[in-house]
Image (cartoon, rainbow, N blue to C red; front, side, top):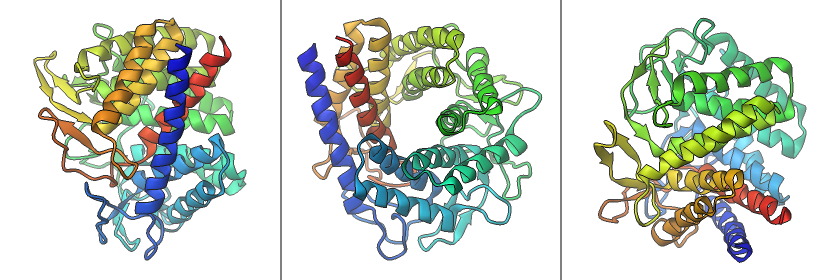
Length: 400
């Protein structure tokens, strides 16, 4: 097992460098600043593509996290590039918060206030502060947190409303994307708000923030995680009545370790115990979405009656972390093997010769013709998987 772990660690170190090099080579926007909005399947830049704040924030997080993991001047410079663009073009200087998107030259396109997007900006700013110790970075993250609490927190039922207008008024279309249900609350936004609050707490450990982290964890146990099958409910009305019955395997395995991390960061022993067990249960539930080649199918519908037979890049990255996390909790070698199988699937099917991962493959093992970089295709999932696994492997090896 030690040999397997050492090899896994070696390959994750190499993969992190591959990913960072790809984004430096193909996505830096020398003409308009920041990073380009879109790179296609064949690594061709789409020059006038709009730029999304989620992409920019995730690039900022990735290079900041890589620098925090192993100090590197180039990574710090690229993190600063993403931060500067965020500050100059995505921050709404009139109403506060961030724009959802700008055009290729930085003019605002979609000005709505999406809690999911603001959460990723908080997440990335907290990581960038660890690099720079610049108090302005920290204060901006705190300011955005206060705006979410002030405008989007549901005082009656808990959790957060998905989206508001540019000036923080009620909105009709809550959706992150066309594939989502138009509901006032979603698992996805709640999970990434929790993720953001957890990273913010690492640099700003105050009681009100801890309280909101605990509340979000309780929302997950009470409303989001099904007690019957340990999958996540995805969409909700204000009062937490569930809309739809789709299963997102990638989110199941991602949440399994992010929820536990939140409990551990606030050092709540009762919640840690609870979410360790839930992490194992959710990881076990995710196995239902695995194919024989180790890849994780995208979604299932109506109690596994139908599947979306595609294997996208990000659920594989989250499987690598989530199954390894279950191995750390239980010591069960089965989960370690599942993590390694996910990585083998990526190596065999998704890795590009230039260093990034393809969007995914379909049931016929054909590449899906989607972005290599874009609104939703970012270096955050696979970059984070590399860093997480190196750190976790080191923890396991040091305990031997």
